[in-house]
Amino acid sequence: MKNLKVAIKIVILFTIVLISCEKEEIDITSTELQNNDISESNELIIIGKKREDPYNIKNIAQAYINLKSVNSKMPDIDIKPTHYYLRFLPQDNDEWNILRLDTTLILYDFPLDYEIEKFGTFYHDPSLPEDKITWQYCVVPIKYNIPSIQHELIYEVFIPDYENDKRFLDSKQFLADLEYESVKLTGNLHQDEKDLVNAKGRWKPKGTIKVWDDIIGSNTTPVKIFDHWEYYDCGGNEFDPKQRIVAPIEQCKRAVYHYEYITNTGSYIPLANVSVHARWFTHVERDLTDENGYFETGSFIYEVNYAIKWERGYYNILNGMVHQAWYNGPKKKGDWNLNIGSGKSIMYATIHRAAHKQFYGDNLGIQRPIVYSKINICYMDSEGTGIFWGEWAGGLLPDIKIWGKSPSTGNYRSTEDVFGTTTHELGHLSHWQYIGKLQYMQVSEIVYESWATAVEWALTNDEYHRMGDRFGGDAAINLNYNSGKMYWPVDATWEYSPIFIDLMDEINQRLIMGVSYPNDLISGFSLSYIQNNILNDAYGLSSLRNAIKDNKLSNVTNSEIDELFALYW
Image 1 (cartoon, helix red, strand yellow):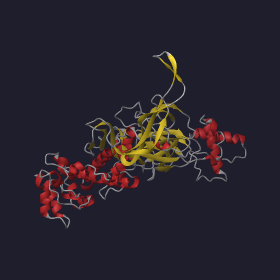
Image 2 (cartoon, one colour):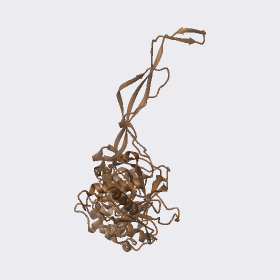
Image 3 (cartoon, one colour):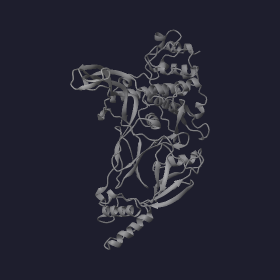
Image 4 (cartoon, one colour):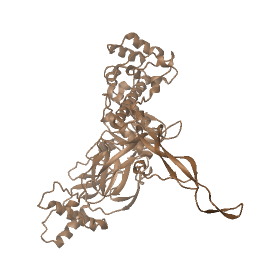
């Protein structure tokens, strides 16, 4: 979805000449110029055949018997399960929230002891109605206090603890032998892994996750341009059809090309604070990427299934209304370095960036949109913008919906637009949480929409200016996101007014656009100051104006406030 804008053209300083009688194409294979996308399906994950889990306690127990039978000196070990492999079936959103708010649980909406036949971005058990929450699979410690939600014990599990199991001198090697034997017993041993009995063969899944952004940084693409034909004398003979004789060749021609570098806005940037999973059957490890997009999980001996689960402690990104959003990566032994550049996943990643800023990052000091339940942010892969539902329907509707495609063009929206829409809808939730649900219900539409518009404007500009400073790109550094709201005429949609933006920005739209625009003589307010001192008393235009007067900055007068509001009546 890269709608790249051409910024600069730099003509390369050398010319490439090719000898030919016809036009010929050049293949550029430089590593820097290749697209490093890893594509994935946007469809339902398809589950394949059931596999025998080497961590199933029955297989581990049999593996121990096998080892003991060939080594009589092996110490007697009481092999007991360390975990339960369970699945829950929440009946409603309240039960689902009980599970999702438990940060010790690693929930999967697909079974862990089956092959994934076809990768996708979500899964729903085919035996359940599409509008119902699907089974939630997890592996929990034996001592876990299982909540009173419909669940099934699939089987008991033994996960080797290489770091803490010190029951005898050579525990690590014993655990490696035990795991190896169980893997061999269950038919999961690859030919090239027959020598990995040694405990030192363990490895840690790691890698770097990046995502495309339309305006942060820049990228350069070479474009081959035909310049001219160059003629030269050459030897040899050719058949002259007019004379019907073989005549000597007097001239040949060759195409002369040059390359131009076209510099476009946009680049891959590190994707921070996403939950990356490494899993082999019921052995699951995870890590959050750091600010450079790097992750490193706990250790394994064998290959792993990599995945990104689009959730954090306070929010969850869904594919549609009820399906958990995933990025299912490769099954491999080795690093996973991923560039997300297309499909639904670039939407998930951008929504995640905006949500993380609101819930965990620098949100300019305003109320974080944290409520008693985990927030559902539903991505809709169709035309629209965004909507905030909150809990008006008792948790039956999603809290927030974000659409990925433009209503006017049908194309995917730009990353900054999706980022901004997410901050806007979370701005509503923040407002609601700050003043309370009952008070929020009394606030006029122009106040709550104008406030969310100001949150969107301030947070999106802040994010892109910071990221532009870090990764470059004039488009990000100089972004004036949603600048149209700063030049707002009286006949525009009233609900999305710039009244809060006008308290912060340094632009007087009347001087630029004329007398039909508000006369903005005020600046210097911050988003957090407006929230902490004004928002709680703002229900409509009159109360908002009075609240500003009661909490005005020292350089602002009442007449300037009246002048700003003059066209709103």
